[in-house]
Amino acid sequence: MGTIDTLILRTIVDTAHDHFFVVDADGKVRYVSPSAAAVYGISCEELRASTVQRLEADGVLNPSISMEVIRTGQPAQLVQRTGTGRRVIAQAHPVFEDGKLVAVVSRSMDLTDLQLLQQEYALLQKRFSDHLKRSQALEGDETALEEVLDELEVKSPLMREVALLLRRVAPTDATVMMLGESGVGKTAFARQLHRWGSRCDGPFVDVNCAAIPESLFEAEMFGYRAGAFSGAAPGGRIGLIEQAAGGTLFLDEIGELPLGVQTKLLKAIQDGRISRLGDNQSRRVDFRLVVATNQDLSRRVEEGSFRLDLYYRLNVIPVTLPPLRERREDIPGLVERQLKRLNRRYGKEKLLARSSWQSLMSQDWPGNVRELENWLERAWLSSDDVIDAKGSASPGLLAARQQEAAPVEDRAEPARPSPLREEEGLKDALNRFEHGILAELCMTLSSTYAIAERLNISQPSVVRKLKQHGLSITR
Image 1 (tube, rainbow, N blue to C red):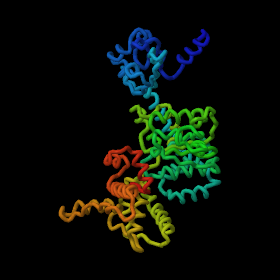
Image 2 (tube, rainbow, N blue to C red; image 1 turned 30 degrees about the vertical axis):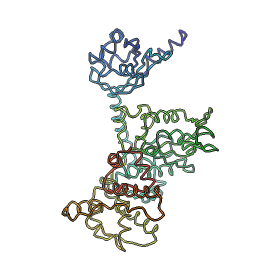
Image 3 (cartoon, helix red, strand yellow; image 1 turned 135 degrees about the vertical axis):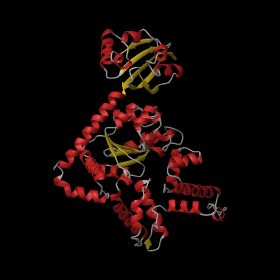
Image 4 (cartoon, helix red, strand yellow; image 1 turned 90 degrees about the vertical axis):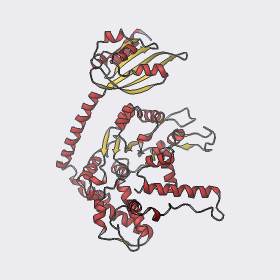
């Protein structure tokens, strides 16, 4: 590298917001950027004269991410506590020459400053929300907006705030991150965001990230050419990202992506280009990205299970959907909408008993809108002409209480699948047996994680199996 190139590179590193370390394979500090002194509490000269082993022992680097890379030879990410009491998130990468580790390059970002920025952003969001309340900018399409809110059964002030914010950002291409508990309606609002946007005539591609195995993710998301691998379709396949061209790509359960998959997704988002498996040429794909998660991604970043740079790319417009227990005003509309759907689907007009409303409104509904809709469908199918909650908004909870209250000798054995039926093969019998187990667990456990733990399988496997059997959590 020439002198000018070296000067340019040094200027870039010295003026960067991140703090850089370059360390020899034996731990000797070769270079630190000037900004590191303020964060780690000692001068750059002292840092350069030391080793990461000594700095870790003295509590300056707690712990040393460079030592982790030297030990493993693999990239690493972790949260450090500095001697100045600050929290920084550090990433480090090994440098090899002829297969031998020769150096480690690390960079860190001060989370203390990031927290201040987040607080400032929250304040700006509140001011923006207050401005929306006072603004008359939406007067021209107020009627259309009200119709959409009615369709989504949005009556509570909290959800109206969410809808107004989405209405404002919909015409842009900014990435939106939907946050909230499972079942709050993130997919429904993502679809409405798409309808409001300038890409409404394009496709809306809904992808459940937890349902795609890591080994198949690249082929599913990016597609492949004919003959790219054994078993590939003869004509190749267009990936989900390409299918979203000109429209919206909705990635649900984004927090479930493995780290290796996150890297591939980040590159596609950054470059706006993808390459199908087996294809040497990349192609540009233009789409609007919306993601959703019920997890705390910032905590997963600190734990090292979610990439910091991907988190920054996704967390442009965070929108939090409150749980149903915090917006009970929406329950009557949601119940009436679901009842109309069921009456239309099954071709019979049924009514909800007036005595049921108190029970429905008093429940916390930990599964949110999804649990409410599932309960109503079960109640519809098991009732005559009038649906009665019988004092509990959740038949699953009611049955559990009755089971606990019953004498031991009176408790019925759990329903077991019947023996092999006539003309039924082993595959069909196993499938029926699996369906029975999953259906029972959906009524007794509150999440796919709990089911996965009970069955000793992975959570994505549970998601796939529930989808295959047409089941969902009802507790």
